[in-house]
Length: 239
Image (cartoon, rainbow, N blue to C red; front, side, top):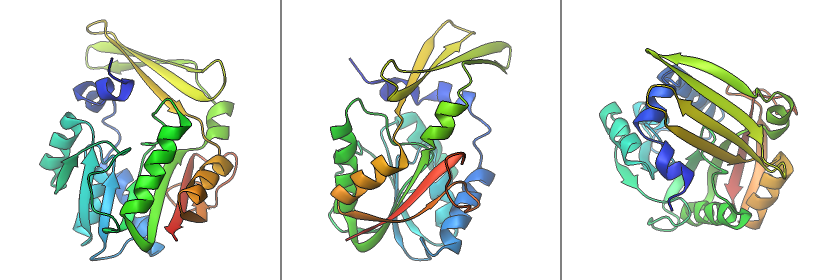
C-alpha cells in the first residue's frame, strides 16, 4: 500500500492551495540572500521542491539549483515554471554524489511525513552526505507548540462549485498532526500526517547527522524563533 504523501501531492493539492504563490517564495529566498545563506553561483539542492516556487526564485538570483521531488505532477508544474534541472526521487535515499552542494533547502514543511523517527534521521544523514564541508542546510518546518495551541478542528473551503472540508486532529499519542481533506465534488478524501517535532528534537537529530545548528527564525521576515512563532526555520552547517 502506498504512503499518504504518494497519493496526495497531485492535481488536487495544486487546486486546493493556489494561495501558495511566488510572492511568499520570494520572501523566503530574500531572507536566505540577506543572511548570506545562499548566493549567486551556489550549488543548491531544493529537496522536496514541489511545484518549484523556491527553485525558480533562486534561479532568478543566479543560484545553480537542482529540484528534487517524489511527485511527478508537482515536478511537471515546476518544469513549466522554469525550475530546472529537476529529478524525481525519495529524500531518504538520494541518488546524488556526496559533497556536491553548497546549500540544501527543505522548505514549507516537507519534513516529518514518515512513520518512524529512523526514516527522518535517514533524511538528515542524506542531507549531510550531499553537502560539502561547511555547507548550509535550511529546514523550514511548522512550529509544533503553535500548532498544538491553535489547531482548528474543522473548516470549509469553497473551491469553484464544490466545498472542501478540512478536519484536523492530533494523533492519540500526540506525536502527529493529522488533516483529512474531503473533496465535496467527487466524494474523495485525502490525509496529511506530519510528525510534530519540537525544536530541541530537530536540533538533536541534526547534530547526530553531522549538521551543527547555528540559528533559528520564527517567520520568513527573519524574526527570532519563539514558542508562538508561525514557523520554525532552522539553519545548520555541515561539520
